[in-house]
Image 1 (cartoon, helix red, strand yellow):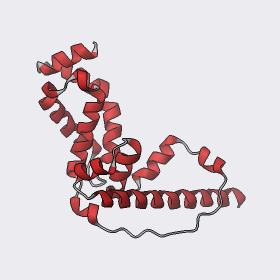
Image 2 (cartoon, helix red, strand yellow):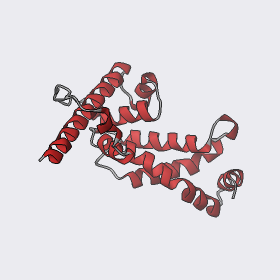
Image 3 (spheres, helix red, strand yellow):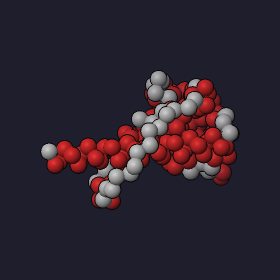
Image 4 (cartoon, helix red, strand yellow):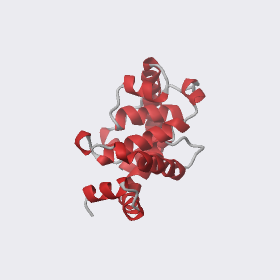
Length: 183
């Protein structure tokens, strides 16, 4: 079934086409949901809510203005962000500052993408949201501020803190791995 046939069927409310859309895109969209879902919630529940929104508003999708995948990704991101506790976005989190030990660049080259995603997932919700929106999705700080209801300066600050936390975790992890190999 082509994307055009899929869209026409979904716009008509055909359950067969809706099921096919879910089957084709749920894996990719679940990954997006996992990146943005607050830790206390289920990414699967967010994805289900997002698919409900997708099917309710599929008539608004215009093939000439963008890709279906991009449009659905945005709905998943917005659905997850709406569940984010706004109080957390303003909460201060203490960050320990360490002197960066000297690590060879090859240490970082050995990391798998899954390792990096696992580290990103350990960030506090607000920092993780901003980091993902800025670094992975390519949103500007102005767009992030509008999406999650914070100031642009807060977005920049959250990104900076997220990077500091990740850098410290990477350095600590690599130091521990180095010591394990020596021991």
